[in-house]
Length: 280
Image (cartoon, rainbow, N blue to C red; front, side, top):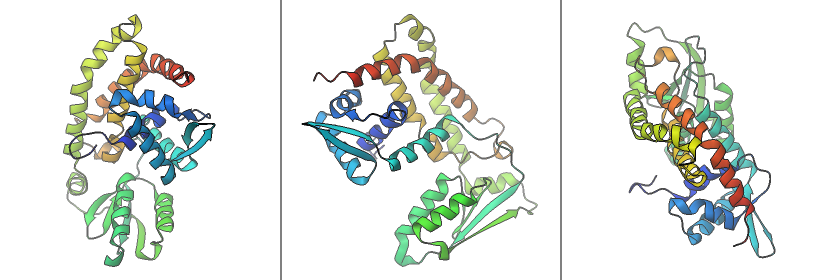
């Protein structure tokens, strides 16, 4: 989302490919992509522009057959979306945890400040929380991922990682509050539930009866996944013992899966029809 609340075209394209086209080997004709993105406010010109831009960035592969352009995910784009889909559909609050923390400390020169900002984003994606002054902690076993990031960004000489056990007498909840804003994430899940519960109630009867059409199922499922995909960016998926007892993530996750499953069949059928229709 942009600051004025509008949806960024690239985000919409990522949602389309991640939710509907990730399993396809054949490239999609640009005309079909225009049709699939039209319900979300993208004009033909905007779709062509963003597809071309994403191809130049390496997220998509483009090819032409005669005068027609086709787009498929690049290896880079597929890797990104596969990892994202795994986190969206498999929340990990209940993975076993032995109480060990992975601690990362870094000191990146001011002259490479952009690298420092990129590293912070990467660490947050892996579920790290900041203790301040270049010190980050995570309950997840992501040592290999940290090494990969450091090597890819060429900052290994500026970064150290340790495994540690906490020995402080203060409640662990105090530590969690310093590093992660779980209250804000809890409210975000609660807001999601409030917005989508009426749609779930409507679709429980409307989808099997056909009152909610396949095209409407496509649009609704697109919007559902587009909104829910932000949670892996916000939620560090801490172990259950570090979460508040009234955690709303479980209810939001259950609602998401039930509604997604209701919409999946009709939506997929409509998308296949749209992709097969190359008359315009």
